[in-house]
Length: 139
Image (cartoon, rainbow, N blue to C red; front, side):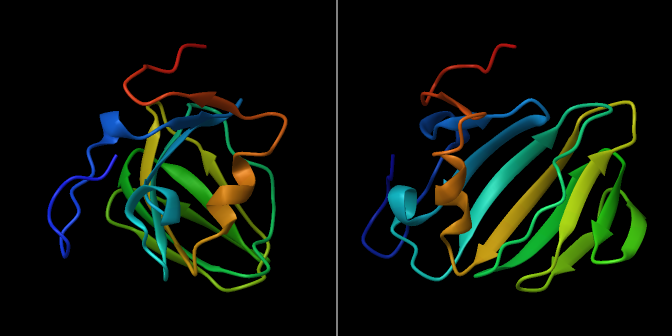
């Protein structure tokens, strides 16, 4: 999965597994299993039109969400805001949150957890389907 020298790792999305949920997909581009990063994890999230993940909490990690494309609604605690390209959302440790796609195209975002670990819990969820590297998710 990892290429490059000792100090540089280059990860191509087709080289990582995809986690598929009923609301969309996540590819973890940097996490301990992929790059051996110890202080953060980075994923590419696609949320399907009209979908979103349930409200949840990461008790041991802060989260940053950076919207690349699409439109949606972000809930952080009791605050609900529209989001779109160029918007960054910081979710403090232990804060309930939810991301919804309210647009007409997939909502594409980069997600960062610090420290890593929250992403590993998704692999064990009964509702996740793991798609091997190089394969396209098919619903």
